[in-house]
Every structure is written in C-alpha cells, then in structure tokens.
Image (cartoon, rainbow, N blue to C red; front, side, top):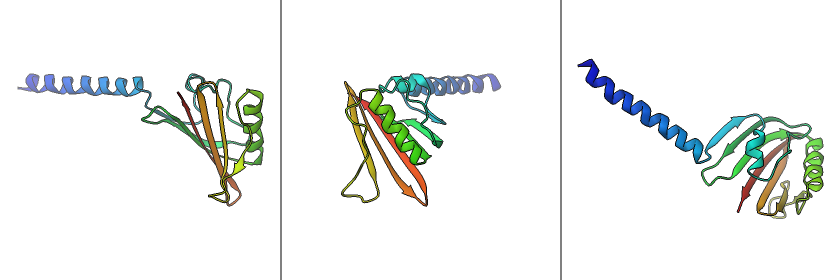
Length: 136
C-alpha cells in the first residue's frame, strides 16, 4: 500500500519542481540585496551597481516582467544615481519633484528600448527609493 501512495507523492513533487522552474523561466524572481548583474543587464542597466549610501535593498521581477528595486539611501544616493544615468547616455538624469505629490521626487528616463522610473521621498531623514525598469 505504501508503494502506491509513493508514486502520486513523487508525481506531485515533480510537478511542483517543474512549476518552480517555469516561474523562474517566466522571470519571476526576488532577492535581498542588489540585483545580480545578469538581471540588471536584461533591463539596460549593465554596470549599475548599488549606489553610494544605499542599504536594505530588495528586488523583484514582477509578473509583467518589470524589475522593481526598493532600498534606503542618503543624499549621496541621489547624486550617485543621477551621475550614473547621465554617464550612461540615458535620456534623463534629473530628479524632479512631482507636482501632484509634494515631497516625491521622480527621475524618468529611457535608452533605446529600455525605460526606468525612479522615485524617492524622505521619511524621518531616510531617503526611500523605488526603481521600476522595463523594456519594450
């Protein structure tokens, strides 16, 4: 009797492993820390290392295949991000305050088929950043 129960359990385990691989193949992934270089490269961000002052980073490939990165930083982080985008020929490297959301600063840029939107606000002296990157 135990042998008959083992086969369905093994089949279920194999199906779960296959689903896990399918999720990875679809690009659904998460991580703590800065995204790996191969992930960044898929969004035109090759060489975009964790900016100065950044910490507590987390990233995720969302269901629509957009890259999302959240982290805390400092005023030095704002400068490091602006400098990197300027030095790497993106269409914009300037943070502008969103007129509809006072205290929220946004950088929107593109480079070929790659797009990025970076926002930050200051909460109790801590700069809270969010990056969304996608490709068309």
